[in-house]
Image (cartoon, rainbow, N blue to C red):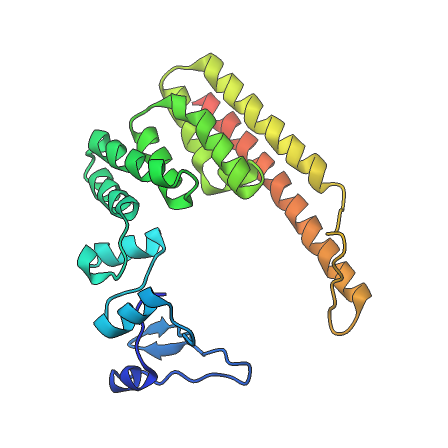
Length: 245
């Protein structure tokens, strides 16, 4: 959620949000951009203050960072915690290669919210650019805990960039260990997803048919299995090519 205003105030600004029969507001297109709307029916104290002051209610760290990068100030937000400020400061320093001080700031943010995705992602970005390979095990653990498997780390490119760094540093044994660990976790994912286990106590209904719902759930499961297998093929293909250089 970004800015809270009364519907009449949005209309004065040129926006005319309209709800469908289910109460969901359709996105409004203006100047080539899409703006999403939702209704606040029971504002808490912070939301009420946001309405009174016109300040942004945004809480998501990445969304706040985007606004800061567009020129907004911290004072433009109704509630700005120190960990989010530290995250934004760390990102700004990271972009201008002030890596050591960026690391200090992101560690402060992580001390408050150690499981925040945005903070962890930036932390591992900084550690990679510092060429600190001690962070590799933490990056692996983060992706497994957060996304349920190492395939996410392969898909986003983090596995390949650590692989390239290890090779560039001449860390042959660590490279071998890293490749083995990634493949071990990928094999574990494949083994788990090869066995179709629909959620217990949940019935999938598609077009009024439970059988069709079950078929859809199985299709989704098969697609997930195919995705992990493709990640393994992609990773090992890159390993082979990079080692030949």
